[in-house]
Amino acid sequence: MVLAFQNDLTRVATLVVDPERWDSPRMFDGLFDKPQNHHVLTHTKGDEAKAIVAKIDRYHVEFYAHVVERLQATGLLDSTTLVMGSGISDGDQHKYADLQVLLAGGGLTSGHFHYESKRPLADLWLTLARQAGIKQPRFADSSGTLNGLGI
Image (tube, rainbow, N blue to C red; front, side, top):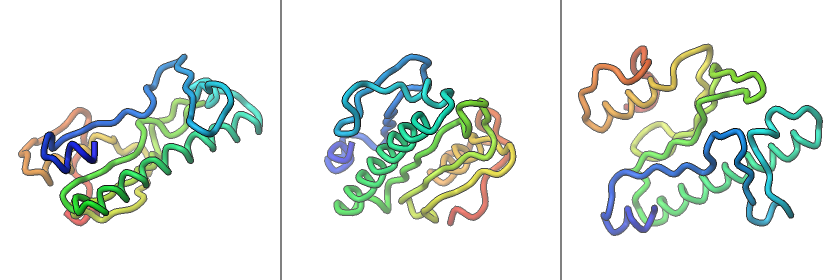
């Protein structure tokens, strides 16, 4: 992805690290001896399951940080917006409120953002589309654009 941006082969990329399916065990390089099923683990009670989910989540966040660092090193971070998050905040209860989102680059205020209450994630996508010059009045179930992103 970083090489494609460096060589101007694309200006848009989406990386799905793990699809949100019910039965998709994955090997997480260097973490486990056998495949782990993140989805099933989020529905499993107990400290062992929570510890495994924490390792998987850390793995994903460290990968995100690696991509941010690579883009920063190549000078592309200011012209690239990286978003990391999920459409669900609690896998066990299938809650879509109180989402946690990471933003980096693109001339935005980077960092951790907490979607309090039930604000739709589509508000972020609408805000980013408008920041890119797309004059879209709405996107999916958006209720408006977000303030405080440095746009």
